[in-house]
Length: 325
Image 1 (tube, helix red, strand yellow):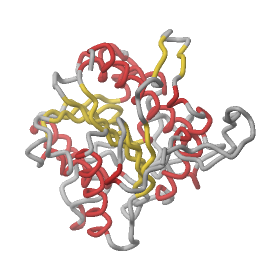
Image 2 (cartoon, rainbow, N blue to C red; image 1 turned 135 degrees about the vertical axis):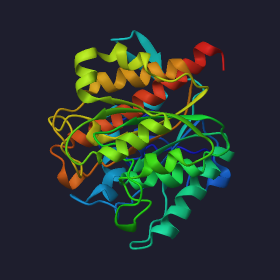
Image 3 (cartoon, one colour; image 1 turned 180 degrees about the vertical axis):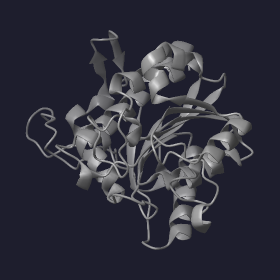
């Protein structure tokens, strides 16, 4: 049976309205059985927010982002960007929505084990996992599954450093995924973009991050030195993983998050950096975290999250086309 997600119609072809059909990511076909997965890009949700310390609601992020992604209805079948004058996706590129990872409230260990196992299965099938969170704690089990790669470079967008050691005895919370990543043998360089504000971490955490070798770029540096400066700081690597905490964007455009911080990145800055990463090497995975639809206004934050995921998919596939892969 051919996988698809299209409504019943007596027309020659569906009319493709975003309010019709099951709201998968980009209205892509569903594949709940990962053993049968055949895709280039596999979207999966991780509706976990038990680590959230301020505003909750990120567990509804996968639903919100999927709903917002339908504004770009069937973009996985190909779309033209008049700014870059390029046509993205479409053709033989296969995007599949794998539904959600099972989460049990109050059970972090079992939830994280489910997450790691799902990502391992997606990678084993040769697909690129795009995970919708969930709070930022989910990046830790995701990255564990990437031990099939060596010297994986992490590109981290965020308002916060997320390099705490184990605050109050919690080693795998949303404030520590980059610290945990630095402890993984298969993780190499880490570039952190958008750092700012109270609560981004203690001075000692910044010192530890720099001692590990992290490159830390504040939001002020992005604004004053420009995107080209940030691009010049992207470490040379064969493989890149992008973790995008939506509070890296300015709350004027992305208020629907647990810990919004003023003076954040703009969409066009973030998108251009992601494009440069795709041109530098292979993007092998991405997560979009900390989107909280209950805190959002008119689905704006979900919309930006969905758009940045679509951008990353478009840029990485276009880069592969140009490299002849």
